[in-house]
Length: 436
Image (cartoon, rainbow, N blue to C red; front, side, top):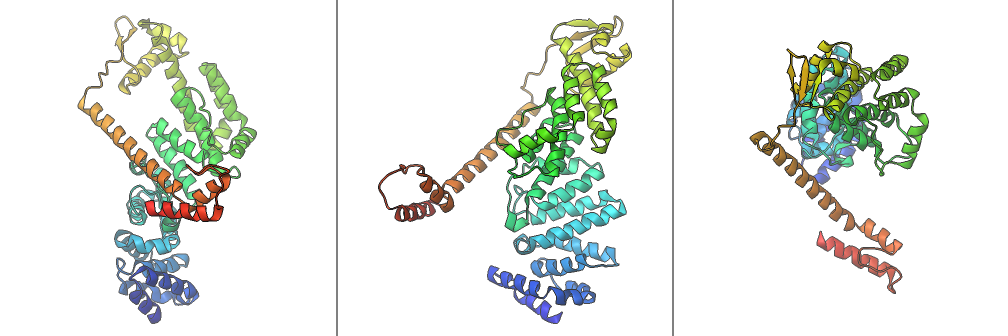
């Protein structure tokens, strides 16, 4: 172990040393594992902020084995997550993510998911090159946050609009991205931000794929239900969705969901209740029965809102009949709730048992509305800048230029022109590299 420590201390400097250290530790993994009893003392001699790569590797070896002192392990992990060097972690990101997953499982075993959130959130921050990056630890954090019903934790990270992915620096894989979208959508559903949830579910379903994955299949089920709540109908899959995925989803779709969509289109809450009862077991098995209940409630609200397009004033009894509700008290309670949630602008005359529907009095000139518009504009400008940078990166990529020249269309070069392909390709690549 002394030789291992000497290598870690002496080679925690520049990138070449870090690469050599990574190779050295990998070759001596079995040796380190055989000296597991000395890992704790070795970790105590290292500075987690200066020797992050070595510290992470040793802690990873410990995490893969068995350890009795969980409190000590968590202190060591906390030190790494809080003070670790992001650049050094990029050389052992796979090991770092494994450690984070062990932490998640440890708290899951304790059934104390809430206690893990601060630690996992710190792990996300240390692994991220910047806040625009999605990491595998996002999904681990989201999972425990959902089990703790702390939806605001993942929502706060999602609202930062991370879009960048660095497979080498963060060990991000396709599965991690799909889980990020899936758990993120559930978090948005938990705070009833259905439009945001639909965006994440769409991102998962449009991820390039050669076959339908189980995660995308589950995303589609929630996509159907959330679409009904948000829009009253199922949104079409975006054109960029994989043809294989789109076709397979149609083939394997469970009749429970298609029947629910059909019943919803009739605007009959009775029909919707029948379908929900008929396929209750299937919905519960998918952990979607709560969403199905919200689908039913959304149809009641949509039917009530439908009356506002025809009448200015209506009795509670008439609304009860048109919306298929059980009592005038239920009508009143629903309308009061819809007014409080800004879904309806109306006033109730309890003496006459009538409801007067009013025009939306939002003037869009409040300080809050201006701040909201500024946030949306800032987000739009940020996304535009990222899209522009990505476009520039793609069109100046040597691989892209080679491919387009082979196809005879490289933004300015005319197909079929008389030129030396190899020479012109190299010249075009050199010019593109000079512009970067």
